[in-house]
Image (cartoon, rainbow over all chains, first blue to last red; front, top):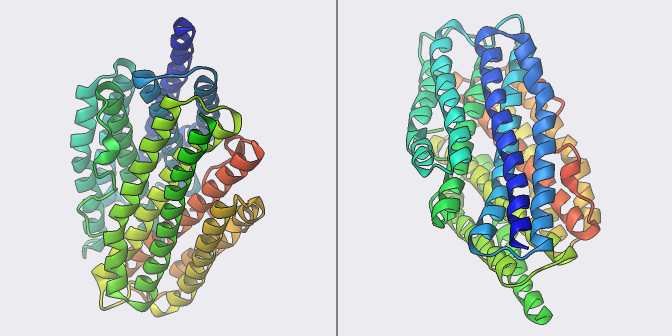
Length: 226
Length: 226
């Protein structure tokens, strides 16, 4: 009985790995669409989101079957419950990447970004690309050291996000109202991607250590006035 | 054994009911803060969010213990797994109400809303107040008819949300950049509150009917170009 459970747990873990890899691809593709006005990249992210949604359904189904058929205890139960949560987090990250790609597609061939906003959004994207790599790594090895880095470093993304507001509110700002709206939403999507990565990292810590990250404040507070 | 399980399931259901009632209070309080510049209401929402977070932790703990101690099958398992998801949804709705309250607190004694935006945001708030009532009702009675209404009606909120963009982009718009930023974010928070209500409604349908709502498109698409 145990062997079967472990095997089935592995099948779910494989699906979850595929999900996080798809999310990384979506984050990178959205960045490419946004920063390089790459229409094909944008479309690939938008089309690819369905696969992430389907993987989430598959993960939920498998977890529910695992819980129904067998009676997981302690660590296994922690893994199954956390897997449900991780799948929901990754599904949402796919949505957010899709929103970024949709914005880039709408303004194509123009960029939604003003020239003076490009530097800041490039830095935010670099941060998210690094975070996506870390998410894949922390999931594959249940690496809590990497997970802790994701948690600690999120402040950097929040600081960059705050700077986007400073830029928009400065006298130097030359953009249109449409650009302002787009930048506010794009910044929000990217900040939320970071928040979700933190949430996923806390789950990995929980799986390994048993310390429940939901006991920590998990609210999206970035110290910004917004 | 069955009796104990049912009793414990009832304890979780009670916590979930408390959560949804707290969320309703938060939504109404945030609306009051936003539309009437009520600072006390804003502070109450901000302070009260901790209780919603604590309830979520409690619900998760109880669900995990239920899954560990006993082996729920079929309907019971569906309820436990859905309860985990509902708790996460309500926790997030508390965050969003808090963001609205924080925005109102920051601009106090001024409203973050321009005069010509007030009507639209009042209508959005009225919609959310109705939705919050429906959420409480659908949870208490597992009422799928009400849940279906929540799902169907979300388009109305999305249409109002779209109108906020139309207003901001119109030549009549007289607001500052700060007001534009605040309105974009406030609109987004309110639209997301509606999306989460839909997600909760789908869970209720799933609990009652066994039809898995995750098989439906659950993406936050509002037909808007944003």
